[in-house]
Amino acid sequence: GWLQGQYATPMRSHPSWHYASLSTPDSHPLAIVAHYTSTDPGTAINMARRRMVPLKPTDRHASWHVSIESDGAIVQQVSFLAGTWHAGGKTARPIKGVGAANRTAVGVELVGHGGVWPDAQVIGAARVWRALVDAYAIPRALAMVTHAELDPGRKGDPGKPWLRDYAPAVLEYAYAER
Image (cartoon, rainbow, N blue to C red; front, top):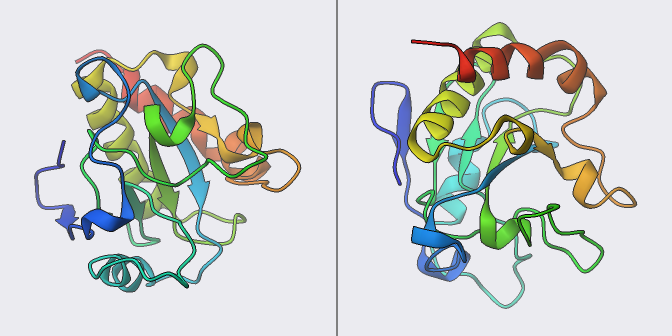
């Protein structure tokens, strides 16, 4: 459930920030949900550090599996076999045919505000998507679920620019023959 290699930094969150396992067969993810952080570049490490200490009663229940920085750095906070609170507010819809995103899908946060995505970040995203597709045989139709699809009245991420200009290349790389 953890990424390996030179591009990935594991920063394990405290167990109070996530579910012990996904509610899926073998605890394997069935989908990938794309988000953006609405934060400036360079914030992934600090967000991960905050989640390494126990959740406080005043904290917002917000967690995810992996963040991808604008420079392409990948920070993983939670095993892909555990559930996180990335897309499950009271107004959120389940992923069609899969169930509640928090209990069935990986949450990937792209650091930024949803406009322009640097090449290095897109390459980092392609690496993450490919690793997830390879490890868990996630079908293409479930590999780029958006937060906006799940909670359209409240969320717009990862945004039209991501879906139009970058997601197709990320998915192409993820599903390319090797």
